[in-house]
Length: 137
Ligand SMILES: CC(C)(COP(=O)(O)OP(=O)(O)OC[C@H]1O[C@@H](n2cnc3c(N)ncnc32)[C@H](O)[C@@H]1OP(=O)(O)O)[C@@H](O)C(=O)NCCC(=O)NCCS
Image (cartoon, rainbow, N blue to C red; front, side):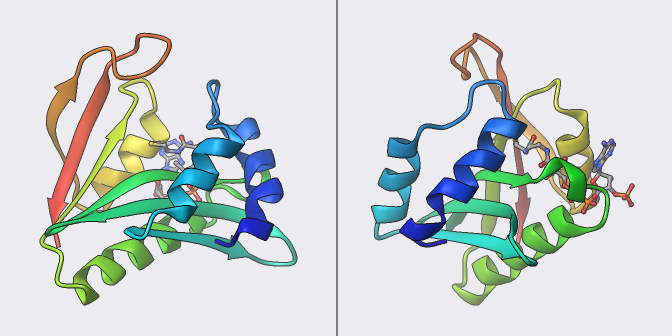
């Protein structure tokens, strides 16, 4: 993901999330030296993910697929890429937060071996808790 991708990514972000990340949040993570962020492009950008690399952990901060392209394996390809990338850097663990109400995402993560590792209370701006999920890589 480059800075030029942000307009397209923001469009998908706003389509996907009830409290979307702002442009500044994307700018900040893209500017971070420890981030690895990707877009999935066909004729246009249809998906993306942002990660932060810390010690022996790859933290998946955001992953989304444009609505009209879901259930075709795009989310799986993105997640699989992130896990391989983490392994290539010798990271030991992948970790993420997800809304307990987000059953499609939880199902995707469980399919890829993530398990429920804990809860963060009042994690989201609307007060919903986050489920913490992780897996070894
Ligand atoms: C979660 C998301 C990224 C999945 O992307 P996708 O491209 O549709 O995923 P895939 O086609 O690779 O599906 C892989 C698996 O995810 C699960 N899954 C995906 N969508 C699902 C749905 N609507 N209901 C139940 N399970 C679902 C299934 O286990 C699926 O495997 P299957 O097709 O063999 O049943 C996508 O739904 C999305 O962008 N959602 C909005 C943004 C979001 O919530 N991101 C996660 C933030 S934590």
